[in-house]
Each structure stands twice: as structure tokens, then as C-alpha cells.
Image (tube, rainbow, N blue to C red):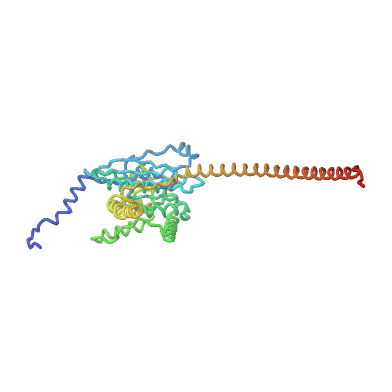
Length: 379
């Protein structure tokens, strides 16, 4: 150890790291998942204070409802603040949860997350690894419909699968449709179901170097699942302030008012305080889990065996199977009827043959008796 008061400069390493990160920027991939009409697009635009995603035409939202497929929509944007750039990718999942039969509707979402891990792992195995394309999902916001009751079976099923693959954060959409009392009860029920079903949600270390950060972390974690209000409109409050929010007859629901919703806490978690933790936990936990699982069952460079699990194809396969089974059943009935007709015809012919045989026997006997009667008597 050096006894010099100035030191040798090791303490300057964080500054060097800061310069490197500031120069290269960051890549962040955020997935939003949930039923249509829960304000996912509005929330994204509100979160980043810009029109990253164009709202859908409400009249055309269900034009493709007959297809019953979940799409994967990728929106890319580059954000800059104080000369620091973030390459943002937002993954939307239109069509999820919009149908009466949502069996396996989560598979395209799960496949997309796994495919990004697979793509990154394949790139790492190449001799040249400069400029790797990285679309691994760092965080998934799961939007819950504000029913005031509890999680639906579809929510539980999807969240179970997402929690093992990505940093999952549950979000109660349109919190301004619930009273504070109902919202508190709804949050409590959701947490009870999450604990009972062993759903893995994103957590981060609460303890920090300073007391203020620890208190802030505990305050953020206590708000989960986050209740949010999304709005890009400027409205004027009763006291004359211009804020982002929604105008009602009773007043204004403010987006950034912590007494109205948890939007500020969620934004702080995603951007200001824990974006790096979301990125690093994706690398160190979820990607490593996928990589470990795949390398246990595959050789290096061996392609992944992909099973066809598209819900649309499954429905078509099921319909074809039913049609084939019905055709086989009809053919079996037809052949069975032919068989019965053939058996009946065989029995009739056998009876006729036996009658003719008996008749021939009788004629032979009669002929024999005549021959005996006509033959001369020998002396």
C-alpha cells in the first residue's frame, strides 16, 4: 500500500468508467405486455415525454380479430439528455388477451424473449464478435386491468412464464378508475396471488451507501405493483397549475402526483435509479440461466430445435385433425355398412346353396330308387 497522501490514482477508476459509458451510451429494451385498451402506448409516450409510438386507430383495433394471433411490434428510438444517448427499443404485443380463447396466446411473447437470448448466444460463439446485435429484453411491464378484484387466470399463467425469463414488473393500468381504498385492496390481493403462485417479480437491493437512497428504494419497492395514469395532454388544475393528466368533472388526475398514482416512482425505477441494474441482472441472471440450460443439452454451434407453438397454427392443426377424424369415422361407418350387406348376401347365398344341395341329394335318391326298381331280377 502506498503511504502517499495523493495516492496512485485507483480512486479515479469510477471517473474513467463514467467517461466510457458516457461516450458509448446505453441500449435499453423495454417490453409492454397486456390486453388492448389499457393505455400501453400512452404510457410509453408519457414515460419518455415524446411520441415514440403512434396510438392505434380505435375503429380499426379489432379488424383482425378473426386471426387470433399475437404480434410482436418493435419500436426503436434514440433519446438524448445532457449529451448522453440511450438507444431505446420498445416491444409491444398487440393482440394479446383480446379473444375468448387465449390458450397459448403467450407463446409468441415467450418465444421472442428466448429468441433474443439465443441470437446473442450464437453471436458470442462466433470468431468475430464486434458490434453484437443485442435485443435482449431488460424489463417487461405487465399491464393489469383495473377490475378491483384480483389477477385473472391468464395473468397468472403469463406472469409465471415471464418471471423466469425477464425482469417482470406488474403495473395496474388506468389507476384513476379506482378509488384509493379500492386501489389499496386491489394491490393487496395482487401481492397475495403473486406470493401464493410463486410468481417471480423484479427486486433490487434495498440497502444503499446512504440513508436517503435506502429510504427511496424502500419507498419504490413498497409501491409495487405500480398504479399508473398515462396522459400526454396538458390540463389546468383548480389552483392554476398546468400538468400532465386527465380532466374530470370532479377535478384533475395528475400523472406525476404521487397522491394520485405511482408513475413517478416507476419512472424513477426504470430510468433514474435502476436502469443499469435491470440491464446487468438481465445479463447476469436471465441470460446466464438460458445459456446454462441450452449448453447442458446442446453442443457448441448446434442449432436450437424450435418447436412450432404458434396458436394460430395449433388451431388450424386442431381443425384439420377434427376434420380428418370425422372423415375417417364416416368412411368406417360406410365400410361397416358394406360389410354387413356382404355378410347378409353371403348368408343368403349359403342358404340357397344348401337348399340346392338338398334338392340335388333328393333327386339322386329318387333316381337311385328308380334304377333299383327297373333293374331285372337275376335267377
